[in-house]
Image (cartoon, rainbow, N blue to C red; front, side, top):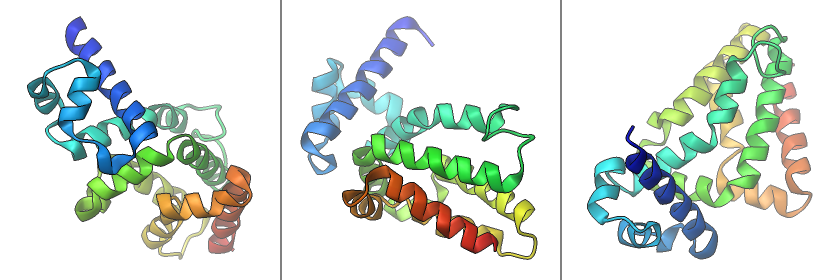
Amino acid sequence: MRSDATRNREAILRATEELLASRGAEHISLDRVAAAAGVGKGTLFRRFGSRTGLFQELLAERASALAQAIESPGSALGPGSPPEERLLAFLDELAELAQRNLALFSAHERACAEDKYRDPTYLRWHAHVTALIAEAGPGLDAEFAAHALLGSFDADLARHVMAEGGVARLKSSVRGLARAILA
């Protein structure tokens, strides 16, 4: 990627985050993002295609460290650890990601509502959780259980749960649900 393209991408993603934090998703348009990033609307549209594409890209970037940890042997999330431990560690990290990016989770959910289960980041998370559940709990409907656990990170639900007890409550609740599913 050319340096100006990289710079524009970073400016666009940073402007999107700032607008999410200050105005909320309902007030974000491609025009506002382009103006805040100092790029033309055509640049933004060519790179991301739509608000949905923009939110998908931003979520994928925010989730990239989590994706790397899943693949890294020696980390609590990585290969070599028992599947239940990997699952709980992944869910903890997802709770942290949700806490730091709640406005993005909300915007992403609204933008991708019609195709929520086909979103690339969701598909990666679902495949990972499904595989861990299948390994830790043979005989379970691992695909359904994975959807149920990932549903715990719905932005409105996460916001509600964290309003009383913060991210610690979200982690504890999701861990409890995972253990109950595997029991």
